[in-house]
Image 1 (tube, rainbow, N blue to C red):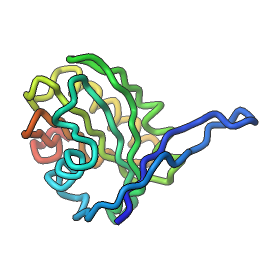
Image 2 (image 1 turned 120 degrees about the horizontal axis):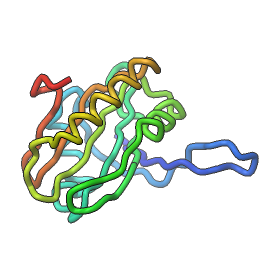
Image 3 (image 1 turned 90 degrees about the vertical axis):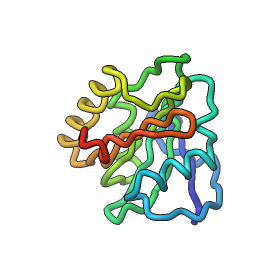
Length: 154
């Protein structure tokens, strides 16, 4: 399977457009299972090894097929700035029906912070309004992870 990475740009007419940055071959399993997503993020992006927080959005169709991965932000060792607006602008441009929000904790501790929990609620509420569901929020800390879906936090 080809995993495509996208970004957004401002076109000459002032509109926001998607730009495919690169594509990588990856034998992706079902995106319904968090451990498959974590493995993909570790193999393709080395998320568990990053020294600062990095946030990504994985756009999915209704069959949980990956439409694309978006890098959203790079923060500090303990924080990153993310807005539901930027997440859903990208999700809508690519035609996603559901999304997975994913970020790392450089500390190696995958336990979500209060900020992570509040952001997840905001993303979930915005997605409900836009009819793009938040399938999961995955926090990766070193070689461990926490799935909000598996932990019944969604």
